[in-house]
Image 1 (cartoon, rainbow, N blue to C red):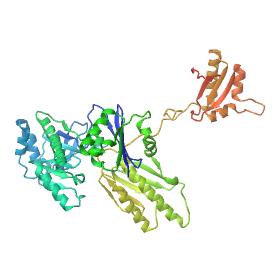
Image 2: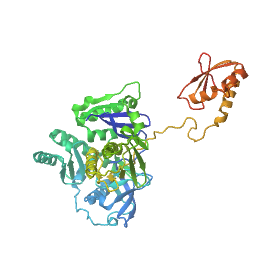
Image 3: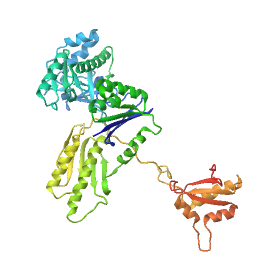
Length: 523
């Protein structure tokens, strides 16, 4: 599978499109503005605003217009060490020495109460795990983690965990011993799958950069008053590359020079052998048009999404869940082939639904109404097929078998609002009002324009471009012995009018030109 990352940088935003085998799979936007926005992975010094014992949770001010939420279980086992560090750091000048002296423990009780740990006005270091969605504020955790390509750094932890996807016991042992030998005191780590086979120098360099990032945020704590942003996650472009970059990436195209150098330098750090795939786009067409991204966006973000051979999906969003209805459309067969036909439509629908969930970043509960199938084996095949398709999704998810009503329930991690892109265009006739000028008097408006040109501009020969339907109405005879509206105009104003048609022209619009075809300024 080939993967291409197309990055469109404009003054307002940065838009990233991930293509797999030239098919649009993910799209995300990042605002290009000085205004601070809340993002997953951002770390803040916040202030506790309200403690809610009934919820065993608290609301924290991190500078957003909606207060963020943190539950007792999200404080983490080593919260007491974090809390002591935040309270005492203002009195210490040697950050590294003070950090290493902080004692980890005792751990927070799992069945404890939040009002025994937090109080209104208390300062707390938190990390965003879910962006504000609808009326809800951000979801927070006090277990800070700083992700790199090979290692996730855990401040105030004392253990090393290894990805279960690394199968070799020898490699697990090597990585664990290596990382433990280079980790400073009071730091823990999670070794990611990408670290498999990496040399000590690579892991040591990455670990040093992650520690420097954490220490840089800690320096901001000195003398700061909440809310205060300490440090942010990487940009979306580098985050995608950090998590997905592998041998299947064939190209990274970007149309902005500074972003090009930023990505090239990042690739050089994490995977020097892939540096050559980063390219600066200099074509005349917009970058999304050149790589067919615009057309795919227009065809993928509507309420109705077409499938193969006349079938289609209808996607609806509600506050509680997302609903997908599978329709066979014009694809109808009768007899013994009907079950096979339905099964084929459902399999194609599953392909597109898994893509749509990634593309629109649908989260929460997704209910899919597949076309009913009588064959239990086909229902089981469809369920397994959807599970396989969802393995490519980075978001945490769970797929349940079809119910007896043909419904499949999918839960998918929701960390930010679903991506919505407006694909409908404003009607050129009514300009979005839903109303147009009376068609019965369209010829009167045309006659007023003609009177202006003949009497005020003294022009007596015209080329008139019209929509084919309007042209037929104006040139058709009103009766067997009567002339058309256009001929009546010519007789009344002593002029000649040659008509042309343009199917792209709005229904009642008219474009006047002189006999040489030069457009005339309208009245």
